Length: 376
Ligand code: PLP
Image (cartoon, rainbow, N blue to C red; front, side, top):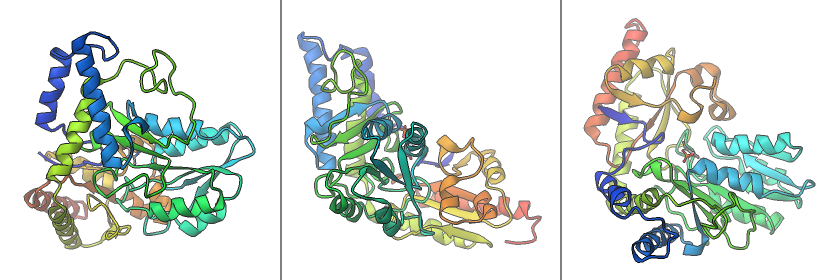
């Protein structure tokens, strides 16, 4: 199998799966219980919180574990904004969980403004600033795009909007950026930042939210008081410990030079295919996601043909792949035929050049056969 859909999800590191097993079978205790083995479990959660906090440049009491980034993002967008006379500014390139939360707020009568994207895939900072004013309560701009991998200039944006209104809550969806590009919530002036374990070889079903202690969101789930009474419910111990363990392994094994070389190798191979158009900026990029369109081809068909050969490549956000079209690529100004022909290659730092080579050779063959061998 060749798997180039890591932005959609990743396999769990085998060492991490092993660690998890312990929390299902041996250390299965409820972290809230007061006997010794349970306290050990509580300490493991505490330690995981410290690991995630330090990777974000945050303090441990500022990290809330959730079930996924969709949950973290919904929490901020739907709770960070109570003032009916205020407004919210969201980048038009956001993942569905931010975008749909913003649309939900709009349906409740709130003034929601969408900042345009540039053809390069970055949010248009001038447009975003022009839509931000003294009544803006919340601004949300993703750190790295799940469609193109481009990295928004978060520090410039957060500082800029806070100059307009210092009380703005600045939220960034860090799902595709965390561990893949540096982040420091303090120096980048970020108030809320979401991450998701299954994008870095931890399991599905665990995420986290960093929250600046100066921000007062209402509790997401009321109950037994876990997560500092902000998100009650018995903790997903195995998932939480796994997420921190995977983050440590990812950081330790991430080889920037290899990631950059693989990305350049992928681009070089794709450019050999006639009618290939690379989408968005490939420089200020995590270099783990590449969107490319193939003239005259339908990505959906290419994807199926490749899957038949055990080669898996994405077509933009997997969560939205059952909806028609691609909102984000359309926002970047791409024509419908280009969008229809766009595949999203997403690598893991573990991906090899051999896998990239085999996948691109197979892709070129499929494109050739689709075009009736006329081009390519
Ligand atoms: N935000 C971005 C940028 C994503 O890529 C994804 C997942 O595809 C999510 C949010 C949702 O994350 P989760 O699957 O943890 O809900």
